[in-house]
Length: 397
Image (cartoon, rainbow, N blue to C red; front, side, top):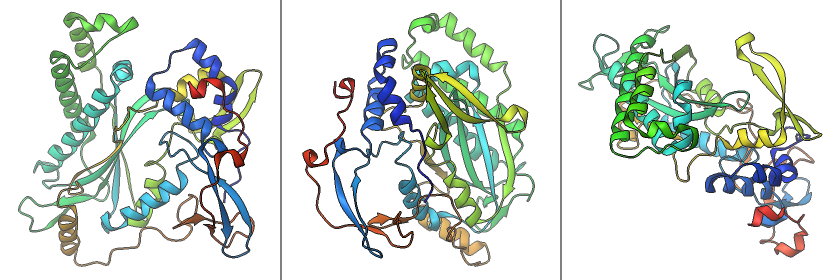
C-alpha cells in the first residue's frame, strides 16, 4: 500500500473552508463536494470493525463519502471498474486521441457545464465515428471510450476529452476487421476542423433555444450580437486535437485507463505543505519538458480552483460509443474477436500491472502484515461511539 500523504485536501478545506465561503458563493454541487471531502473517512459518516484474515489485526474503518471528486475514494472504485472492463477490450493496439475545448469557450462551460460538456462529448464522438467511417480514411465502424477531464496541472480550467480507441474497426458490411496503420490512425487536421464545426453549430443551436445562461462579466453574451462575435472568434481559432502514438494490447490499455478514468482534479500526494494560509503543490510543467515544479497558492484560491471541477449532479463523465456502446456491445465485440483470427483475449490486468490500491471483495490489503485482507467482522458502529472530530459549522449548514 502507498504511504499516507502528509497533507490532504480535506485538511485544507477544514482549515480554510469558512474563509472560502466568506469570499465566494459555492454552487449546491460545490457545497456537496466540500461536505463530502471533509467528512470522508471520519466518524461523521460512521464506520465498522475489520479484521485481517491472516494476522488477526483489528481496526476501525471509517466509511467513505463515495463522492467522485474526493481524492480518497478513487482507489478501490478504479480497481473494480477496471476489472469490469476486461471483457470489453480487443487484442489489438490502441490509440489515444484528445479533444480540447479552446480556452476562449472555457468560461461558457463554467456557467453552463451540463450543456457544454455534453456538447463536447457529442461533437467529439460524432467526429471520430464520421471520419473513421469515411472510405478515404479508415472506412470502418469503430468503438471507443471517452473520459472527461476539466483540469490542467495547476488546477486551472482546461476542459478536454480523452478517447481510447482500438486501432481499427468493423467493415460496413460486417465481413472483416479493418486494421489501421500501426503508426497512424486518423488525420488530426481533419478531426480538428470537423470537431470545431460540429461543436459550434450545436452551441449556436442551444443558444437560439434559450439553453445557455450568462451572468456577471459574461452577461453581454446573452445578447445575440455578443454571442455571435464569440462564435466567430472561436471559428477563426485552431482547435487542438491530439493523437498520441499507439500503445500496446489490452494489458497496457487497462493500465493506461487507470490513469484517466477515475482521476480527480488533484491527488493528495501532490500536496506538499500548508503554511501561513498558503498551499504548496507539485505539478509538471509540460511547456518545459514535463519539468517538476512547485506552485504556491492562497488556501482560498486552492479551494476555488479545486471546486472549478465539480461536475453537475448526475453528469456521466465516462461514456462509450460505436462498437463499445451499451446497445448490443457484447455481440459486436464478440464478432470482432472472431474476425481477429480467433486470437485469445489477453488478460488485461495482471498482478502489479497498475498502481492502484489492491482490491478484494470485502476489503483491502492489511497494512500490518501486507498479506491478508481486511474483512468486516461487526455491524455498523453507532456514530457516538466513534467520537468524531466535530465538523466545521459551515459543513452542516
